[in-house]
Amino acid sequence: MALSKANRIALTLGLVGVAGGIIYTIKRYAEQQIKLLEGTEFNFVGMDLPKIKKGEVTMKFAHEVVNKSDIEIEISKQRYMLYINNKHVANIYYDEPILLNPHSKTIFPLIAIFSLKTLIGTGLSNVSDILMKPDKVNIDIKGVMTLRSEFVYVNDFEYSDSYNLQEVLSWV
Image (cartoon, rainbow, N blue to C red):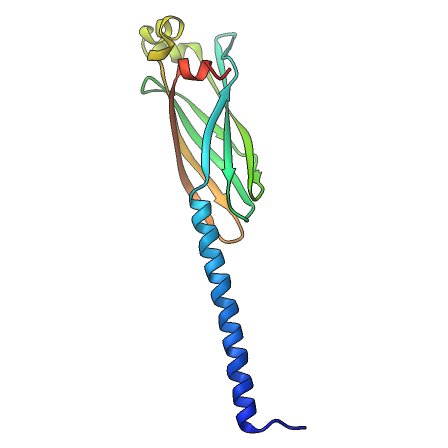
């Protein structure tokens, strides 16, 4: 049985309307997820006690990432700079991809290795402050990373965090 011209037009308009509704719903969902991705939380959650061996200082920081979206995110190409009392002491690189599952918290390490000479070169008062006045020792991590998901690719996503050593040591 053949459809009349009027029925074919009505059917076509109905299909176009349904397709438009589906496209609009997908667009709104994607916008909502991107907004949640923009609100991804990065929190400092701890640090191992610094280790000094053969003139080298190793500091291992733990950061937590909270993914509130329905989308899986991959973090890669992390590049950071570590500052102690506003003096650059180390570059931190982490190239292993980190997969953040939807609606999850993931903890990942950042490991800084630098020479004791570098720390001393920032000023002898820093070394004495580390031992005697940890509340006066400020630690800053600043850098960039690559974020990618099925909807988003962000190269050089900026990250920074600051804390003082006394605060950090309370989490050890």
